[in-house]
Length: 507
Ligand code: AHR
Image (cartoon, rainbow, N blue to C red; front, top):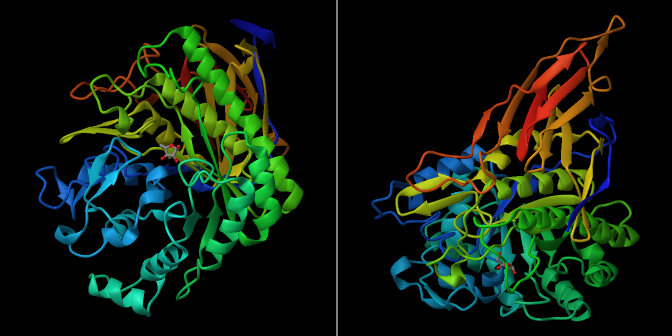
């Protein structure tokens, strides 16, 4: 099942090729997705002002701190599939008077609408996050969408007056607006041809009020549905700023497998799948290049990540899963791949922020844990808004169930005079000796390379199945890394432990 397809010999080399024309890695690639699903919003972010869980205006204090710690740039809300059943007017006004609804997609849970537009946008404002609103196209009207945008962003007009009556004088700033979600599926089961017309119609009424400028995002095709991208780009590229793309690392939807109890073979199969997202991004980008060679329209990976079986004993509709060192490696390799497409990929939102799928945070009443994936996002902060340094990795490539998985994945970027290199070793049982020639990134003075310092951090675990459990000491987090050795001022030798993610800061 697992073989080695190509070999670079004993030593792995990473060649850096800095270029002034390389793209900037949009910080929005580190975006989060927050849906009304299970305990992502309720319990995960919002507990209400009367909760015994320490909170600020109803938002958990520990979660507020975690959002700040990650410097979360953007949050997508209210779904997902939920967005296409969400009628925003149910979520405004006095909470005790808001109607209840059944969340048909996610476990039939009764939604009391206590977290609505004000609660979401006030949270974004409090923590300095850009909101990304997903509009209801599946079961909502054009009028509803138009009024929602006016309610959120206009200084005057009937909807602005209603907002003021509900206690918010100033409009909020809302940049990102999604015109439907998965309109090929839970968002209306449309065809690409039908949706592209619908998109043109709905987006006409997504207006810019009072100096607010919307960045309009069309609902894209699933995984590698390039036909969808082609039709939408052909018919509507000029009317959009971005088109979404969703990708979950699931091999068999009927048997997704346990988040914590998996074989080595399962693990390598997942890593092979992760590398496959590269081909899907390339496929969509190629189609987009046909209609938008200037790369004005962004490819927005606004849902991605692992999707395992729910934890035993939890509601199957709530998608609560644990998060192990395997998820950390999935996150690191995915982000490394996204960086390479920074010229086209302008946003990515991992699914989802708290308690759902590949979460950053898991909560249980007043307890909260930071997952291994959280720590990868934290370690990668220096890459946000940094200039990509294109690179080449020469290493062994595993052949896993017909997919190829290079054993070392790497990315590099430069910002504020420092170079950040992140490396992941996906092998479970073998460290990798890596040589990186820094000659191309180190400044030269009087014909000699300037002396630089190297600092490193590592995320690793004793066992790939390790996770951070409630009420236990953390098993996976960020530790200082001492395995990088700078020789002759320019050659970096790195000993990358098995199943680890390392970030080096050079400057
Ligand atoms: O993230 C869970 C669900 O996955 C979202 O609601 C939907 O858009 C996707 O199918």
